[in-house]
Image (cartoon, rainbow, N blue to C red):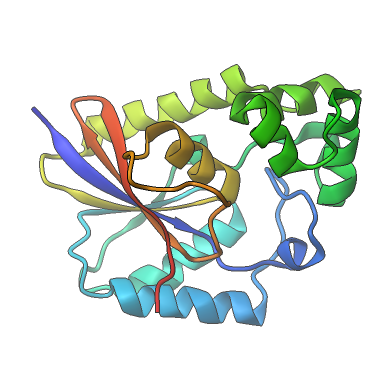
Amino acid sequence: MTKYQIYFVRHGRTFFNSLHKMQGWSDSPLLPEGIEVAKKAAHALKDVNFNLAYSTDTRRAVDTAKIIMDENRNDLKRHHIKEFREQFYGYFEGMYAAETWFVAGQQHGTPTYLGIIDKYGLESSFDFLKEADPMDYAENYEEFWSRINRGFKKLDKVAKDGDKILLVSHSTTIYSLAKTYHVPELEINETPLNSSLTILNREDGKNTVTTYNKVLE
């Protein structure tokens, strides 16, 4: 039996975040305030005895992971794991979020992201966007989870029983994990804040999210 914990931290606030633009596989730098909240997360996590440190391969995640691990008690090499990237928004990368979700949801009677989720479920937010993408680039729900599950299999190969793993990832990715695997007492009503903490326990291939969107100060 192997049981380990993944400390999912959302990256610090970025330029695209401030403009409310779609930022999936595209990237933009951390803002000064994004660096500051990442430093708060670093201070809060400095005494956590991490055994492995990961981020996705986006610059915003790499930079956040560096800030966190520079203050941590363990001097660990940081690795990239692209399977835990943000959802790929395809044609809509870089567009304003409100415009994107209007295009994806209006023909289904709900022109907002959370409106789609409330009415149709998380799965449909992926599938409606894929359906609306004229280039057919965006990930649907099945494609997204196929990628995420490949990431878990990679971690399973290196994690040891009792390990704590830092993994700096992204809003929709963390939100999707929490919506899917949270314990009943956790309410998952909003997407995670920048540099917030979500803890996932993984035991013999089964996931349980026990902490979600905890602000680190």
